[in-house]
Amino acid sequence: MKNYIKYISILSLALVACEPEFDNEVSGTPAPQSSGEADFSTYVALGNSLTAGVADQTLYIDGQQVAFPVLMAEQMKAAGGGEFTVPFMADNIGGFPGIPETDPETGDPIPGTLQFPPRLVFDASNRTVNPIEGVSTTDPTEVLDGPFNNMGVPGAKSYHLGFSGYGQANPFFGRFASEATTSVLADALSQQPTFFSLWIGANDVLSYATSGGTGINQLTNTDPSTYGNDDITNTGVFASIYPNIVDALTANGAKGLIMNIPDVKSLPQFTTVPNNALVLDAEQATSLTGFFRAYVGVLTQGAVVQAVTQAITQAQTNGVTDPAALAQIQAQVTEAAIAQASPVLSQYAFTFNPGPNRFIIKTDVTPTNPQGIKQMTESELLLLSINQTALREQGYGSVAITPEVLAVLGKLQTAPETVTPEEGFLVLNAVNPIVDMDVLDDTEIAEIETATEAFNTTIKAVAEEKDLAFYDANARLNVLSTTGVNVNGSVITNAFVSGGFFSLDGVHLSPRGNAVIANEMMETINAKYGSTLQPVASGAFPTVRLK
Image (tube, rainbow, N blue to C red; front, side, top):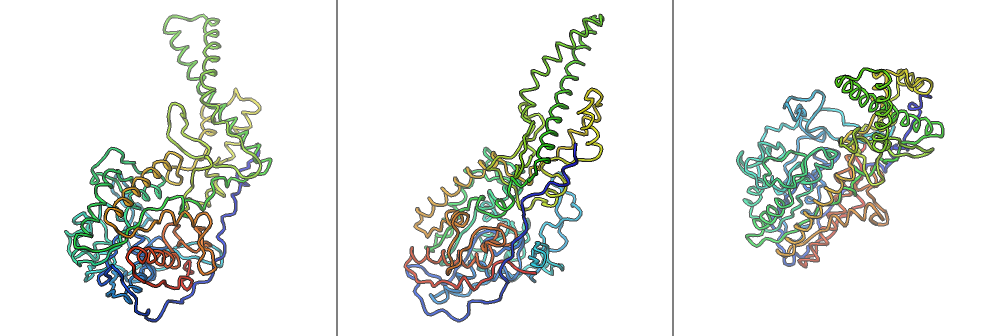
């Protein structure tokens, strides 16, 4: 059998060239505008990384300067708005130095990882995305003097906003919290906001998605203190907490804007790497199909050997010693074992065709899927963070062939009865499925969509009950993923790098993406409160950051 894996390639994932970065900024003071029924004198923005200005996988000054609340606050100044302060990081490298990821079971640091990594940059010369060079100078233990109007905290979930002492768990808040025991909501309320924006809830489901569904869907657990970072928040918990946040923000009569949660399928993190990027020529397709026929044969033989061994042992224990009788038992058990195993094991006889094919992924081991593998369906999603080199060159998502495996495959074709159990395991272990952290399967996607719909139902109901401006971010980002959005004659989409709306992490917005939604949010505010906030020149903002 030909060692075909080295020739398997995926559909081109090369990043397309993007427009150069440029420094054009909206300048000048907007002409006086009306605030209508709203009062913009003290605007406070609450939320997570989107509100804070995270881009390119981290928080850094340039991203903070173009966060949508900053852009809106600048326009609000012409309608009576006051100063809008931001807890800036120390540099444009971003993140915090020297804080490693930890093993969730032991708590030990994982070598070579950073919990808060530096920013990503796009190298146009070779079309790659890489971490920027240098080490951040931001000290997470240095507490800034506040208060700050931008209260966006990367990583925050709905139940974190009211959690006293949250800054001790999250250094992004800890570095600008008024005191160690305060909460995000308490520090926001202490400023007595006259207007607020609230975009929270995405992380209640997004962290589950970006982990590949490795967290827990907390369907029955209503105690957020027991949740892991990558869990889906219980929908009842969200429905209880979210209205309380808005009640507190509106208690003094403040007006506000609240936003719902986008569908993860509209984010490049989940739409960039195609799940059918296993591209084969005719010979490769035949070889890979043949491999899985051999794989099924090894599994079947293993089931037969196990059944026969047990039957013969039991027969001998019962006093059966006649060779003919034992041979008859062996033949009968063999036939029965094959008949029993075939309906289950036949699912692994995957068929491959010339051209694009879908990858093999790891799934739960169950009685109906004892090997815990399957071929991806059309709707299942690969994460942008997957090791694309492994997909292209190491058989990740298909089979990792070695000379030893090839030798066993040859024996299976010519003398299958001579293959030892150890050699059979070589074939079984050659299957290299994509692991859970790199993929969202149909079950996980359904869990995410169910939670997102429930969260958005709560958000919309609260907006209507409190008579607040409501921005349908979910609908808007779905447009990006279909027709795109026309901005001054240029269409921007959710396409990674070339689309212009998202930054290099495939989740957070580019400067232009922030400008676009800031304009749409201001349109929503104007429509609700009769204000006349003017748009920023979104076309003057860059898309991705170049090296």
